[in-house]
Amino acid sequence: MFNDYRFTASERFMRYVQIDTQSDPLSEQHPSTKKQKDLSELLVKELQEIGIHDAEMDEFGYVYATIPSNTNKQVPVICFCAHVDTAPDISGAGVKPVLHTNYKGEEIVLPDDNTQVLKASDHPYLQRLIGNDIITASGTTLLGSDDKAGVAEIMDAANFLAQNPHIKHGTIKILFTPDEEVGKGTEKVDLEKLNADFGYTLDGGEAGSLEDETFSADAVKVIIHGVITHPGYAKGKLRNSLKIASEIVAALPKHKLSPETTEGKEGFIHPVRIDGIAEKCTIEFIIRDFVTAGLKEKEDLFRDTVENVVKEYAGVTYEFQVTEQYRNMKEILDKHPHVVQYAKDAIERAGLKVKTESIRGGTDGSRLSFMGLPCPNLFAGEQAIHSKLEYISVQDMNKAVETIVHLACIWEERS
Ligand SMILES: [Zn+2]
Image 1 (cartoon, rainbow, N blue to C red):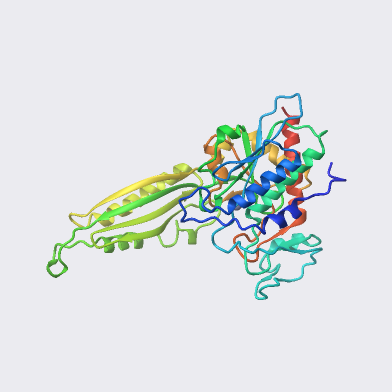
Image 2: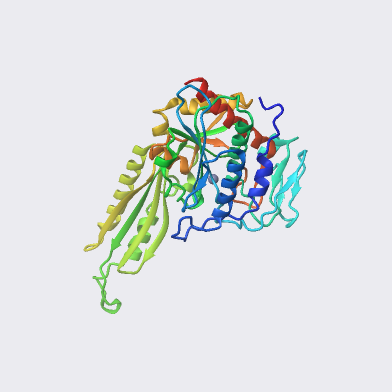
């Protein structure tokens, strides 16, 4: 199917990463940084050049586009989604992508900072990439494969389908979002306008991987109201909320239930911020579990801990506020098993082994799933993300393009 096709994903990728699209967690604007629109505008232009005439960017920087159906069958509308922004952790300005052809397993010293060395002993996945062409940054910035790899792969798949009109598919939607890295990627998305039944984000790692499970997440805010007096005349009266807050944090389990002591499917309770004065202190926590019922258990346990500390101090009161953050997308995806099954079949058709993974975090896909667009995450090839040693294989990118196309075909065949 792809024999005479000249893949364009890596060329597109090398162009897109040179456009700075770093998002800003402190901004109240949408998008959080204007520069994200520089890439989105270019994507609209390139989509139109491909022949996708309804491609447009809205005021918030979201790109929407439609590849029209070319079959008589009634096929559910599927959407491929990626984010244009890069992480705030490391600079995304002045990215100089470097292509290392025919990687042979050697150490790769990045040209602009020779202390940045990419080696297989630190990054075992590199061993699987021998013979591949690898793209890195130059040593002073991140690369931006998270998630410009996904963007470039969706663009190339669109280009492939435009050049191969004999390949049958239903209506396919394309969605590029801003601000995923600052947790606001779905905040201004218009799902009515998108009008898709099912989605796939392309924002994963190694070739063949598929993520259909994320954490379920709540935030808990504990507010301690102490009893305040003049410190010179405080004997027997003062109850210092800062000390009580410290006691609560110290009472958390030390050998379990924390990010630093858990892995795999284990959840945790994690303090992220303390803010206060002697009179009143607020502690913010995040609570994570793969099972939503497990969140409730952790919250109950934690509430007991707070209660046990506070009850020793007469006159002190506390508030315990739970806010839902996001939920494990598997709760939704299990109701539509074919969405994940077709993705597995598409990965196999691309000649890869499927590797199903759980994300110890959230994705835009988990939010979209609960907003009504069931949306697992497909591999995009990105590796060592949010670091100066970020890298990606050109061949992995092309496999992602093939997977997108196979997936579109499978939806048509089975409708
Ligand atoms: Zn990402």
